[in-house]
Length: 170
Image (tube, rainbow, N blue to C red; front, top):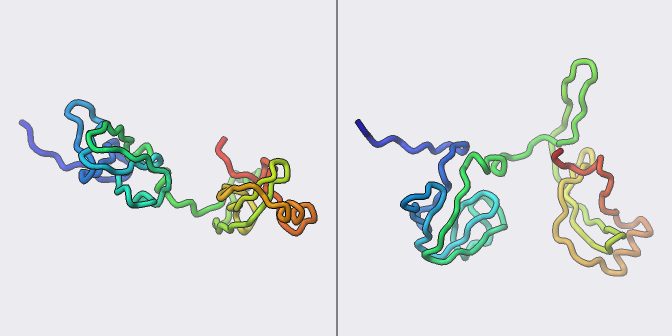
């Protein structure tokens, strides 16, 4: 006996992420859809949204435009769940050698303009306000001669290159 089952709506399920305003399910492929209108597909979380929007509904800037009647391949909510979790604690944690307890502090991000002298580039470095752990660099461009000179004189901070002070996985 068959009966309709409620679709799982938790952010950690294995169902494809579909916005039915832009796509319709493919008749035979579970993780593919056929677009019914022009839209954008977020390359991070997989959401489909309007071309006029600069960010996806979750705030990600990386979108690929698709046309009507185009094949769209989806990710699952479980595969992109980590992109929806807010990082609240800094990754720069210490471990007590006796109890093996991990000590961390709340993450408060600050944006600091920095210069990389090796490549003559200017960036906004996003780092933890408490410990200085660097998380990312944005808005990169060629540094002006005045910025390079200020960095050489110590009036402007240098880009973090110490691997122990860069947040990374692995």
